[in-house]
Amino acid sequence: MLSVLIPVYNIDCSILVDALLKQFHKVKIEYEIICVDDASTTEIKPKVHLGKNPKVRLIKQEKNLGRSSIRNLLVDTAQYEWLLFIDADTFPSSDSYIENYVKTIKEPDAKPVVFGGIDYRLVDLTSDNYLRYKYGTKREKIPVDERVKKPYLTLLLSNTLIHKSVFDKVRLNPNIKKYGHEDAVFSFDLLKNGIEVRHINNPIFHTGIEENEVFLEKTKIAVENLLQLHQKGIINPKVNKLLKVFVNSKRLGITYFLAFFHKLYGKKLEKINKQHNPSLAIFDFCRLSYMSYVYHYHKY
Image (cartoon, rainbow, N blue to C red):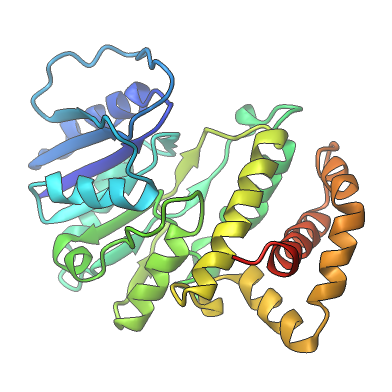
């Protein structure tokens, strides 16, 4: 009935898998949990010994496939018709997490794509990850009544249920190798194909919150990737706010000035973003100016 698919890279997901097994024990359905390690570069020592559980498959890749292709591989490995994508650095926010999805599946008018939402725990906040935590709580932790207004703009693959027949029609783009925006590309493909996305209140905690320095570097990679995807016609501004603002700014002829500003003050903006209680408005401006800088000074 349900295949839980967890892409793994340089992280221990044994605590997550153990929690899911306990929840599945209560719902009594056919299921499997598949974890594929995408050629991790660090040795991972599980905190929970899962033993030889026939419901759990742990697969190790020798070559890194990337964030999209690894999920396609997970689907190709799955045996059941319903697929639940969960990131390795997450944890169920309630003891009825799996049960809630099973109820959704069994509804007479069940939709083929369901997003449960993202949540954050105060216990995971430190002095070194404040920027990522604030971004997550303000931009990703969105109530279901707000998400339904923009169903494609708020979809994240870290907690998404999808029917296999639909995924086979709209697979993740294997050309996306770098970090970031495979969710937005997937959402755009769903939109183009007229596939409805349902939003419910069944969040999962994002526990792997990067430190400020790491998050800022990953943000740069994500911005570069977003620009490349747009230039190749793979992603549309309809499913990404930053890209929409950039396209409008370019039309108004102000991206060159933004690029020049970043060239002069980009490092100072990064220092401001690392401070306690950073402003997301400044963070957004930093991303926009960096995209303009890459566009004008480092054209692909």
